[in-house]
Amino acid sequence: MLVNTHQQSTLTDVAAHRLAQSIVTGELAQGQKLNEAELAERFGMGRGPLREALRQLEGMRLVKRIPNAGARVVVLDRKTLSDLYAVREALEGMACRIAADQMTDEEISQLSILLDRHEAQINEQGGKVYAQSEGDLDFHFQIVRGSRNQMLMDLLGSEQYQLLRMCRYRTSRNAQRTGPALQQHRQIVGALAQRDGELAEMLMRRHIQGAWLSISEMIDKEEA
Amino acid sequence: MLVNTHQQSTLTDVAAHRLAQSIVTGELAQGQKLNEAELAERFGMGRGPLREALRQLEGMRLVKRIPNAGARVVVLDRKTLSDLYAVREALEGMACRIAADQMTDEEISQLSILLDRHEAQINEQGGKVYAQSEGDLDFHFQIVRGSRNQMLMDLLGSEQYQLLRMCRYRTSRNAQRTGPALQQHRQIVGALAQRDGELAEMLMRRHIQGAWLSISEMIDKEEA
DNA sequence: ATTTCATATTTTGTCGACAAAATATGAAAT
DNA sequence: ATTTCATATTTTGTCGACAAAATATGAAAT
Image 1 (cartoon, protein in one colour):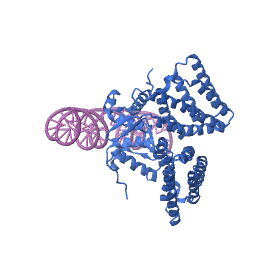
Image 2 (cartoon, rainbow over the protein chains, first blue to last red; image 1 turned 45 degrees about the horizontal axis):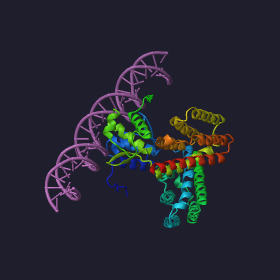
Image 3 (cartoon, rainbow over the protein chains, first blue to last red; image 1 turned 135 degrees about the vertical axis):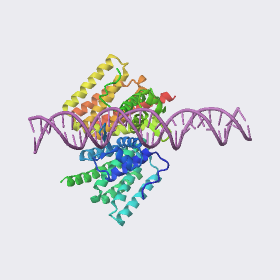
Image 4 (cartoon, rainbow over the protein chains, first blue to last red; image 1 turned 90 degrees about the horizontal axis):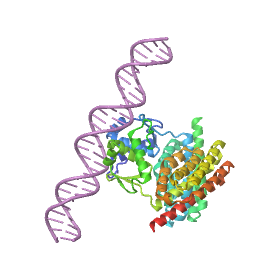
């Protein structure tokens, strides 16, 4: 079950992956202090590689470091998430517009098949929100890949992707937006298939706006 | 003249700043191998802090690391820059639209004053392209700040900002786009002052497209 | 002369120890 | 009881040394 398929990798990468996973799943709570010595021992390594991993995670915005005072897990407050979704809307909107031009017919078909699987999953068991949630991110990232813009892939892939997963873990238990989301995904694929970039961008932007609205409401409830 | 105003900082930060500066100015050539031991000695520090600095620069995309084979300065080829400018257009366009809503009158006035200074600089001496170029980035970043979106500031500030500076150093000697650029900047400030976000976004997008066109042509000439 | 392979050298990856800074503790003064 | 300050403890910052991997070197075979 655990991820042990690290080909032949450096300890820093192992630490970075394990830390990222722990942060995303909430095992390490938001805002929590990360003690270097403690983590290094838990992972069975020296502090050197661990410190390098922390620098990496800092670059991914999963961790915030203060000189001489250590690292803390990032806190996803309302403002941070709002900013994140605004950036996402701009970037994924653009990705979608370009992807409508650049993706092959084959890739668009694959996207459709991916959605079929999602639909099956939803009908089968509405409960397994986790897998569904990861699938959603899959969908989005396939489109980003379709834009052929490497910088976009880096930005959305390695960084925002993790923050989104983190956000999902926090809010997913009661999330019941799978139905409308799937339908919106279908619409987007439709626009891509017709090679209508403008429409695809607009649909993607609305989709992300909708997701933010839903999350925003959830945050309100939590705070109440 | 040299930057020695590091309050009380960590060696890693010193190394990161010096490396970033060397990379941006071209002192360290694109694609060049970065030897840890050599750099550590040059900076008068151990390899630990230097390695951490390299991780930071990797996160800023100034450096590319390959496990067990070391770090190299990033190569700004045509595709990379094209991708960068596409992302910039989306992000700065968005920033501009939001800034039209969010900036204070005071901030917009400051922007105008900044442009007056640029104009004076240009009239005074068309030669000092460097200072002018930094000023241009200043202008763009003030608007990004006006969006109040911290993620945007991080993205454009710490990362893309450096890549752009790097690009400028490479192409600035023969860049003669200061005139039209200033005029476009004035138009943008005008739109901001009128609180017309849509117009401001469109003007910013065109401005960035124009910059890319100009750089693209320069790359063509270099390759010929 | 060119290629192939074993060996030597260089370079990266990792550790443990010490220094310096931040934090926690507790005694003294009010 | 509360605050202030000095001291003890913990935690981060840094170094030098060794191990492991990658690379360079040069001898042997064709």
